[in-house]
Structure formats: C-alpha cells, structure tokens
Length: 437
Ligand code: GDP
Ligand code: IMO
Ligand code: MG
Image (tube, rainbow, N blue to C red; front, side):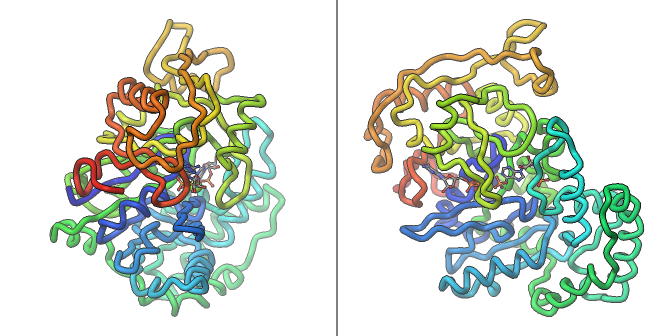
C-alpha cells in the first residue's frame, strides 16, 4: 500500500501528529490537505517537543518531502514563524523540503478580525469556540469566490483588486459587529512583505502528489481536526469549515479518490472536545478533571482546557463509516491506568428506542439522547514501557478487543505515551503486519 490517509476519528487532538510522525519514518511524502493554523499537532522525539500548525508532521524527518495542499487556508505569518522556530531549533532544510499549493487560500487580517468579532458577540449557547485564527471566514471567502489564492501573489495588481472586492463584501459585516474596516494597504502589506520568501515554494502540488503516487512512492495524507468537526459530517454547526474527513484528502490534495489505498482513523481511548457543541459522554465531574490532568488535555495551540469524557463507540462506528476506516490507531491508553472501572458508550436511548448508530442530529437537543454505558475492568499498571500487546495488562487487552468488536475495525496501533517509541505496532499501513516499532 503506497498511499495512506490519517484522519481524526473524533473531535480533533486524537494524537494525529504523533502517528504521522511515526509513520513518516517509512514515507517519502507527507501531504496536509485541509484546515489551517487551527490545527496543532504535537510531535515528541526524545526530550524534544514540537507543535506544528501548518507544516506537515513529516517535517522533522530530513528526507521526507512535505506538501501543503490546495484544501488548506494559509496564514503566511504563522507559516514563516513556524519555519523559523524549527530552524532555530536546529532542524535543517525545512523550506527546501516544502512545497505549497498555489491554489491554497490566504488567511488575511479581515478573516481573523471577523472570526474574533463573531466569537465575542456570540452567546454561551451559540459560540462555536473557534480557534480565532480566521479559518471560517477564509473558507467563506473561498466558497463565495472572493478568496485570494497563494498563486495570486505572483500578480500584485490583481491581488490588490481582488482584496478590495473581498473587503467590500466584508465591510458591512465588520461594521455591524462594531469593528473597524482595515484598508487594502494594511491588509496586503504583511502578505506582500512575505511574498518573496514564499513564491519559490509555490507549486502545482496536485501534479506532484499524483506523480509520487504513480511512482509508487509512499505518500501519507495528514488529516487535521476530526470527523465530528467536518463541515459535512460533523456536529453542525459546531464544526470547522473544511472537509476534515478522509474524502477531503482527494479534494484537498488534488488527486483522484482511487489513488488512496488505506485509511487509518486516530482515536483516543476516551474522548475530548475543545470548543462548544454537543458531547454526550462528557464527564463534568471530578473524574473528567482527572482525565484532563493525567491526559494533559489542554489545547496545543490555544492552551484551552479540553472537555473530557468516555469513549463514544457509536461515534467511532460513524467515523468508521464516513471515512471507510481500514484500521484504528488507539492513542493515550496509558492515561486510563488507575481509572477502573472504565466506561464506554455502546448505544443511545432515543424517543424512537435504543439505537447503535450515532443520532448525530439529535445530539444537541437536551433530553433527546441518553448514552448507554458498559463498564470495563480497569488496570493500575503504567503502560509507557509496553512495546507488545502481551506486555499490556489483560484488562487493557480486553478493552482494545472490545473496541475492535464494537467498531468492526482492527486496531493497527496502540499508543502508550507521547514519545515516538511509546507505541505498539500491530499492523503497519506501509509495511504490513507486526513491524517492529
Ligand atoms: P493532534 O492534533 O491530533 O495531533 O493531537 P494534539 O497534538 O493536539 O494532542 C494530542 C496530545 O496527546 C499531545 O500532547 C501528544 O503529545 C499527546 N499524546 C499522543 N499520543 C499519546 C499517548 O499515547 N499517550 C499520552 N500520554 N499522550 C499522547
Ligand atoms: P487538530 O488538527 C481540536 C475546533 C475549535 C472549534 C471548532 C471550529 O489539532 O486536531 P475553527 O477555528 O476551526 O473555526 O474552530 O473546531 N477545532 C479543533 N479542535 N483540534 C483541532 O485541530 C481543531 N481545529 C478546530 O475548537 O470548536
Ligand atoms: Mg491538535
């Protein structure tokens, strides 16, 4: 199998960065296909911790080529800072290994302004709790056909005309929200200052990715956010504005869906969510706080505390369906040590009776859905040192087996710590069965 999609199977922050970083040891190319600097993917190598936002998580490997695909929205200031930080920390050749689609869209200051103003004006019930990075407004501009693409940096006159048109469309919205409309000059000055640095990196990445797949290179497609945040498949309207799920890989990278061989869904051994919206298995109590503390559940980019709860198996089955998951990577199993008994949600009680499918559109209506839990025996041993299934306590092995039975998706990998090596590999999407970690 030469092309593998990694996708978040929950509400984001499942540990995609760690898994992509791990798999890229055997990959030639890593492609980000959706989202923007709302993502925060953590990579831990030895004592070193790196959080990437726009750069693909393969960037730490000196021979992996990295692609920022056309499905993404790019804040050039954030990208420049990210590259500079890696260079400062001693990673070499970052820009040399990076290509950016000239069809990706720019995040401009008015997008960030509108995102902030809207979040500030929303009530506790309606606030989406966005990352305030301008993601939603940038994708709105794309769909409204007033967005600016990176390729337009090659033509500053045209860029200015199009920015003017976009600003005119945003001005009434900014004013209605009590904001100050910026001038075209203010908007474009920082972008034009960075253009000479980024113009040489712009490319027809769709053709490049297709050529890599055709040459049987190993290509990894790195999802951002998660299935339940996907604009089509998520808990709308409490979602992000891009196609985060596996289908988005074809569109966002610019290749045919038949070029994608394997889809691996990343899920925590429990559930988290950051921002507003339904979360039926949420633990609002002391146990939830313990999960947050032991799991370090604070946003990689915003530092916001993540909401925590039990594993939602109907949600995972839903993710298996809409992504066509071939395998699961189960992360953060180590965090559940000492938690016994552990609960999982296996079904929902609804006015129509008990259902095993996720009743996604009823989730935010109070009293409409009640999770049905089963209890699992816990374990007290720490797991960070485990490198094979046999080294895990029997209760942890039973927990993994239960998830496989409930989702009918095999677990390809179990992650037992932040570090690259704290991993049990059962089936490797590039190398096949039971490769050594
Ligand atoms: P992503 O957005 O999906 O890449 O995930 P984040 O990086 O936002 O959040 C996942 C967090 O969990 C990071 O701090 C990771 O270092 C950490 N992490 C990943 N896998 C494991 C694991 O198996 N055990 C523990 N304890 N932490 C993990
Ligand atoms: P990674 O790739 C977790 C959430 C925000 C908010 C909603 C919309 O690190 O898993 P946006 O700024 O995208 O308009 O916010 O989506 N969100 C994420 N939550 N992980 C992410 O990315 C997220 N990206 C966006 O918290 O609820
Ligand atoms: Mg994250």
